[in-house]
Amino acid sequence: MSMTITQPAAQWYIREMDLEEGDYVRFYVRYGGNGGIYSGFSLAISNDSPNDVSMQTEELGITFYVEKSDAWYFKEHDFHIKYSRKYDEIEYQMDPIS
Image 1: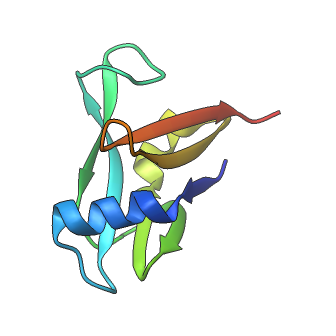
Image 2: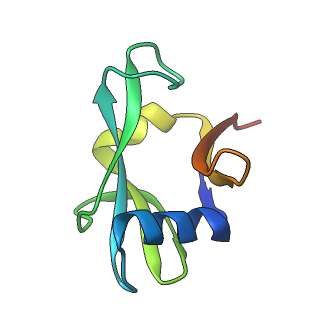
């Protein structure tokens, strides 16, 4: 289980969330929504400091992470965060670990 983010995706978060170097972006599981790997659940984000990190990556001075309490959602998957220039939005890619 690993986590990556592209530089354009990090730039998008910095712009959209008005982030500064040293800030954090947490990815967590919420009930409801679309597009997740588990029916009825989806990802949400917040600008919170970490407590008990399961996985993290840093790009452009921002730490992007998932808490251990949400690690079940990513079980047996690598989590990749990308930016779509065509749609000017973030895309999440969950690849099964082989």
